[in-house]
Length: 147
View 1 (cartoon, helix red, strand yellow):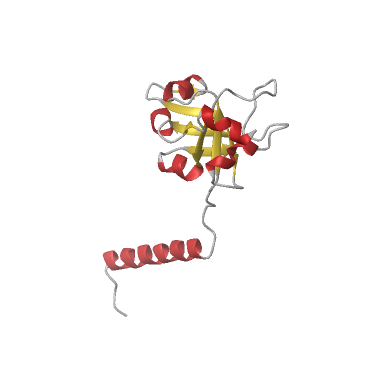
View 2 (spheres, rainbow, N blue to C red):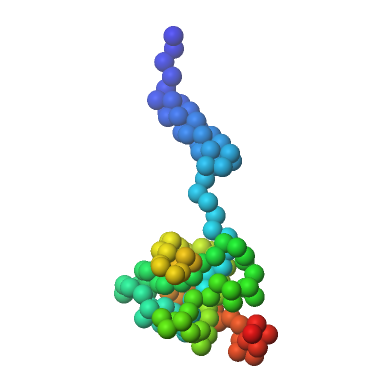
């Protein structure tokens, strides 16, 4: 029996691992995708997001309160999934993005369901990047359409 060089053995082991990972992801054991809408009430800016969450010196925010639904990715449907103020009123404006847009900017959503709000999630990421996609929607002139 011949000895296989160490580098060949390592290469073959690596290839087997890669093939297993690809196979597992193809048959459905990969992490689920969160295609849906992310909605935040209030001012839509990096500074507002920093003020509304824990943050570090680099502008990375932790635990920004948002609502998330996987029922739609249509921004015009945000109204039925919007968060309300503590007193049950609408915010003066809403920030809306698809979860794919948030993820593309490095944002991470984590479920944090609250009594009376099963859609409550926490958002982590760079405030400056998230603010590029989690933007004001709709403009005030469009609000009358949804009433």
